[in-house]
Image (cartoon, rainbow, N blue to C red; front, side):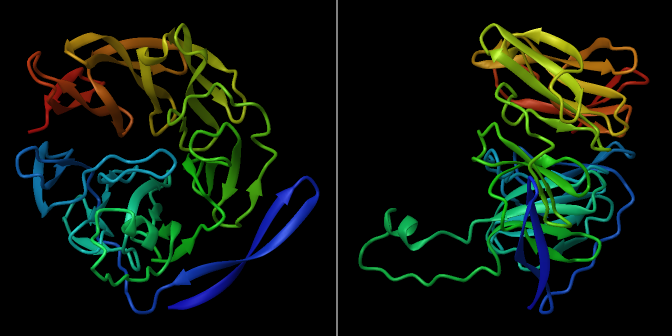
Length: 366
C-alpha cells in the first residue's frame, strides 16, 4: 500500500489550519468497475434470504446467489442492507462470509468486484448523486474491551486482524482510489458530488457543516443558522445541490411540516404538508428536481404497522397528488417509483411494486 499525502484546509472565520491527510491508493488489490447500463433495484428474497436484482426495463428479477448483510443501519453511519447507486446501474453490498468486505455488483451483468481494503465494513453510508463515489464506514472489527466485556470465556485467546483503515472511507468507483475521511465523525448525506453534510456533535446534533471530500475543506459558514427543529434522518438534497427538503417541527405532537427550500435556508416552498410528526416521512426529490415524493399516514392495516399514501408533488405547480398506498418510495428515473406496501391485514409482510406516473400503472415485483 502506498501512502500519499494531500493538504487539508479547515477554515473558520479568517483562520486557516493545515493538516496532513492520508490518502490510500492500493497496490496489492486491483479494481475494475463492472460494466452496467441497465437500471436495477436490489432486494432480499423472503424465503432464501438471497440478494435479487429487479431489472426495471425487463420487469423481471435476477438471482445473484449472494447472501448479504440484512441488518438495520445506524443514524449518522449508514445502512447494512444493499444500497443501489442513484443511476441504479450498481448495487453496493456487504458480504459477511468474506470478512464483511464491501462489494459492488453490476445490476445488468451481475458481475461483482470487491472494494479494495474494505474488510470489516460496518455500514454503507451513501452514494454521490452522479454515482461515481461511495462512502462506507469501517469500525475495525471490534476492540479488546468490547470483546472481553462480552460473552467470551476468560480462558480463551483471540487473534485480531488489523484493518487497512478505519472510520469513514470515500471510494471512487471509476478510479479505484480510496480516501480516509478521518476528520468526519457523522454523515447525513451528500449535498452534491463533492460536499457532504455532517453533524458536528453526532447523529442527533443540530449543528451542520459542509465538508468538501476533494479539498478536505470544512465550511462552517454556509450552515451557520439554527437547525434545531429539522428531523433527524429526514433530509434530502436535489441532485444539483441547490435545494433541500426536510421534515420540520417546533412541536412534534401537533406542529410538523414538510419544507422545500434553497440551501441553506429553512423557509421556502411550503409547507408541502402539515400534521403530526409521524403523519408523513421521507421526502425525496426526483433526479431532475422537479417532483417530490413522500409518504403520509392514513391509519393501520395491521396492528402496530401504519399504512401510508404515497404523495407526489409537482414543484413547479405545487400540485399535490395521492397516487397509491405504499411506503419507503425511491425514484427510478423521473417518472417511475419503486416502493413497498402492506398486502394483508393479518400479516406485517410487505411486497415491492413499481409505479409508473405516466400511465398510473402499478406492477408488483415478484
